[in-house]
Structure formats: C-alpha cells, structure tokens
Amino acid sequence: MPTSASSRHPIREAIGPNYSLDAMHAAQEQTWRAVEAIAARIVPGMRESEAQALGEEILAHHGMELDWHPLLVRFGPNTLKLFSEKSDGDPVLGEDDIFFIDMGPVFGGHEGDAGATYVTGKDPEMAACAKAARTLFDKVRKIWHKGDVGGIALYEAAAHEAHKMGWELNLEVKGHRVSDYPHRALPPGGKLGTFEDVPGAGLWILEIQIRHPTRLFGAFFEDLLA
Image (tube, rainbow, N blue to C red; front, top):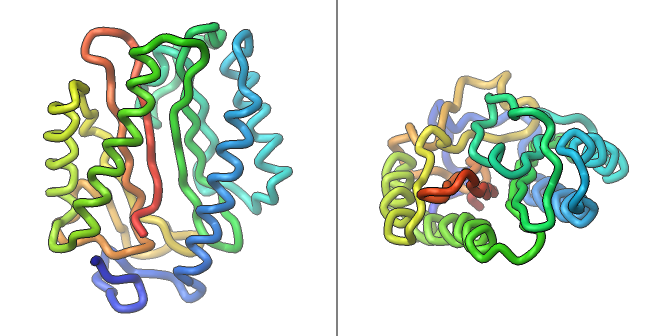
C-alpha cells in the first residue's frame, strides 16, 4: 500500500504547513456531495452555460471557501474537450445525451477535486461510456493499491486496460497534485502521468478521460488516490 504524505516528502510531494490527510478526505467527501447535488439538477433542455451557473450557485451553498480550479460542465461532444479547451458553442442537453462535471473547490483549507460523467435517457453506448470511465479508474486504483507502481506506469496500465475495454484513453490527461491550499505555492508537483515514483496517498488526483472509438462523445472520472 502506498504511504501517506506524513511519511514521504520527495520534492514533488511537498506539502504545506496545514496539510492533514483527514482534512483531505473531508474536503474530497464534501466535493463529491457537491458533484452529486449538481448532477441531480441538470436536466434535458438546459444549456451548458445554464448548468455551469447552476453549479456555481450550488457550490456556494455547499460552503465552498473558494475554487482552486473553476467548475467545468461539459455537454455532448464537448465531453471530448481537454480542461484547457473552450467548449464549442453552448449546447442544449438532449433527452438521450451525456455530460460531465469537474470541480476543484477548497473546503477546510484543502483542495478537493472530483469529476464524473452522467447520462440522460437510454442511449446504451453513452451509458456504457460513463460507466467505463469509473470502472477504468477503479482498475487503475487497484493497481496503485498494490504498491511499487509509479505514476507513469499507472497511466500506461490505464491505456492498456482502456483498449481492452474497447475505449480510447486520452493520454494528454495525466492527473496532478493536490494538497492544503494553495499547492501551487509549493515546489511544482507536475503531472501524475510523468511521476516516476510510487504516488503517495492523499496527494494525487487520478484523472481518466476516454472517448467512444467512433462517436463524438467521451467520459471523464477523477478522484483522490487515498
């Protein structure tokens, strides 16, 4: 089992003075509650910008202190976009559609980060894609739990598993560091997918983004390795 931040301090896993693994867990739990609350309010007929505004309102009601990265909601083909890319237009969510939520709020002085994909209607391939992103995350996390597997190897395993499952993994999405806020004031942690060492617990976000091999949609799932 990988060790926690309290016993590992390589430069890319540096933590701030207020870091607590319990506080990281608490921030992540609160983040997931907000993700689910937003997902429950997103319905067909809503524009992507409307869902974004609604999500920001819900986050404020959940006690978010600030966001260390902005909330992102993507509909339909925009689920293929990288975080750094702008959405194409302002699509309306359809009756048989797919969307994901990605957020990075601060709770209790620690950086939460969670994201998941949801579907409306009964499109079987969209439902399978949303489920596959979560399943692939779980497969890779189990590999990490066994220990002695570095971040680079984790993403190599993710690509291999995605291919076996019939999906394409976006290897431009490589995960990243989190800590007590602000982790960017610490020495650069970089991307999980470029980290040669075994990632410590409570420090890294594993991001999974896959796409359908022929249709214009994908799915996203991320959570804390802990």
